[in-house]
Amino acid sequence: MSKREITVLTDVALITCIVQKGIADTIVKAAQEAGAQGATIHYARGEGIRERLGILALAVEVDKEVINIVVAKDQADRIFERMYIAGNLDTPGMGLIYLTPLDKAATYIPEEVAEKLEKEEAGAKSAAVSNQ
Amino acid sequence: MFINNQKLITCILPKGICFDVEKSLKEEKGIVTANVKTARGLGKLTPLAYRGVGEQTEKEILTVTVSSEDADEIFGFIYDEARINKPHGGLIYMSNIDVVSAYSLPENLPEEE
Image (cartoon, rainbow over all chains, first blue to last red; front, side):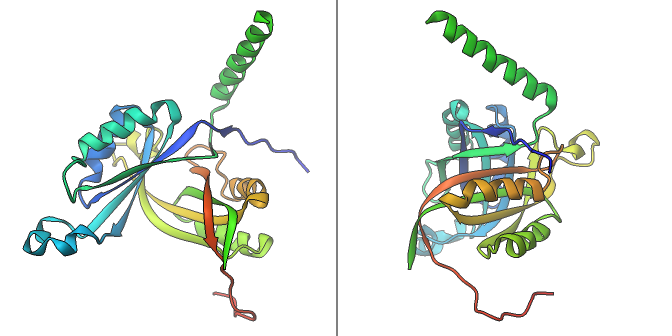
């Protein structure tokens, strides 16, 4: 039986953003400009403030888009803020965004990238040993 | 009944793979707490982006709740079954859950066709 290795990413977080249908692409573009590598979007139906707005409820789309973006923890705050601003989430009824820490993540990592990371890690370890 | 110490494994895959993974989870690991939803996705490595056809592709999102003890094993199992370790193979990640309600299927349930 062959032994398989999974290269896992540990310092990662998930940004989830729930907005009205049609707005997701703008927010994803802002996230990509801030450094996000990709995004997944699915549809949902939302309830909440809409039911209490009376005739004004017409201004709030019932269909929602939910954006999921996995980001490195050191980039998370910047991307989170850019998405918040791009989606005008400070306006009541526009949507919601939250950040969830992840235990680990895994995806395809090209061999040359994995080797580069291993070398950097080994270099950092040897530097730490020589400093002791 | 509520269960503590659970993990949520989420897997974003190209369209058409999730059903087979879900079936393997049930048959080989006895897991019936998997859900699948459809989505669209984009990334810097999206193959269609280079062909001028469009930037987004159809995706499926598989979510599974598992116990903390089994989480790493199931994570690896899904990683292998879904063939994530290839270009455009998708993404898998795991997060903590505080509480999950117990879920089981009735006995002698006929197999889904």
